[in-house]
Image 1 (cartoon, rainbow, N blue to C red):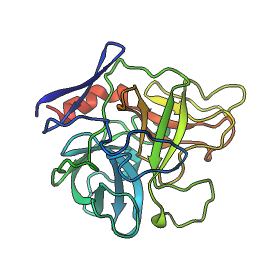
Image 2 (tube, rainbow, N blue to C red):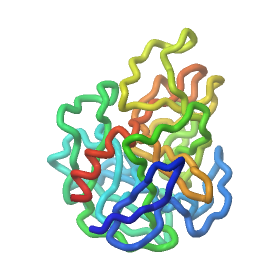
Image 3 (cartoon, one colour):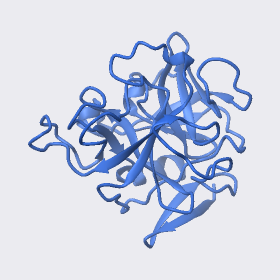
Length: 270
């Protein structure tokens, strides 16, 4: 597949590898996105709903090419058996009619060697679709960062998904619409005001010091994206784990996508 240069940010190339000359990280239907509430339909066209036949919605993911989706390793406890997984692209609501959605089964899942649990790092999964997606206004790839791109602490980003609105929320999530949540990227979590958690080099923290906004159960594997201007969104993280949900001094922990640039390239684009 050809390499397509997506955009430039502070002189660093941000690339996405696709089978068609389509721009990444630029939702065609939305000019301005306001987070923290229900997302506009088509606002996040790379969002994927990952379901298991017997369970329903289990995780989120993001489209990075016509044949590959990015998600979290812990969403696939047995990556050698993926027969029960169903991936929905172009979906807005978990339940009911979604006019523009497409469905694909999973051909295979690739997880970094040595992965054991989210706290141990390498919580990333590359999911190959059995059938390639067709690009549309509601199905688009997200941009991927280069290995040396770092997002500054305090950068305003968004996490999307169909997970619980808050910890202990009893609302059936299969009735929900896709939600977007504004958050801030942080460099540290193990401070004097936070529970001691080892943050590895391939992780990034995001949240608000005062709490109140966070990814929750059901958002796992979904994208944390940051805008670099001009309406372009780069995926900075993958929802991995946290201590509770939206609690004070306990930001969410995400797999840092730039740390896996080589893994993604060697698996997907070669």
